[in-house]
Length: 453
Image (cartoon, rainbow, N blue to C red):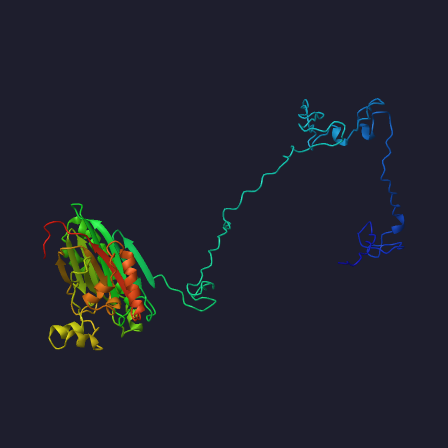
């Protein structure tokens, strides 16, 4: 960037300091005679050093020059080698000089000068390497997180799955975690599937195994089916199955009779579902006509030759013996419109279940249920077999005990998870109109003396 040139300063009057023009004989402000002003001295920047050897101007004693030698260069004398005084007249350095630590010539102030170099170190020697400044703890450290491997589509096995759960290649919706669930716990296993028609899985289950106080093993399974016409049926079935399973696993090791424990478990499940209806008033204002969350429940406990079942609603328990020559049995009665018609003798079972009102339930868990009436029953089978605990998503395709016995694999007791998968597959092959959930509980050979209940 260029700058404007500056003009030279004009001379000033020696008397009043007012500027005057070149060639003026008198000051225009005070009338001072400018002709009597002496000529400015010539500039002679170089000082002439004269006098006897070792004497400088004002009588300063300079060090005597060293004798010339052909082997060593003449010593260099610097102004800093001369003694000086501070503003009070005191010497700037006194006392004996300290020896230079690294072979340099001694210096009166404790510093060193390199021998014959003419260089003086007026500050402490600096380290060869400077330490790095410590990182600021307030600055967050950048952590590189490895990217998760891309999820492939379960349908085409080629496209990537986007954040919305759909394949970028074929557009197939990917299954959610609850769409298909499988679990084993000791000898018991369960499988739940969304089915082919529903947009979500509203079924849930809980399986487990424990021991009684005398060390006898006990296995349990709980299956719940959410009521689709109610609010949040998936949450209701999940809460009920979890509460009932936890209650059984707590009561049985304490020595509670299995049938009593089953009754208490259903009550605990009902309380868990009722709690879901306790919404803020603002939430109810947005959806005043929605029903409270609701579901059905069915469970089974197998221990020491005893089989206990409990239920509310239309989910069922079937008994299938290993010896297929012996009859199978359905161990529960539905809380439904069709069951009421059959019990009252108004319709045959075939006619009742063919009616469109057949699956209208008359008992359920939920805050708007008429009353809680848990059903429980105990049995003592005289032979080994398996207990099938299921929702209507399965028994709609194998309604009678004989039909259920036909689709249960012969090695069901040894392979309960495989059996549950086979039964779910049977429902899907039949159309999968509903969610399908099945739990398989093996019933071991009863001990001698076990009789019929």
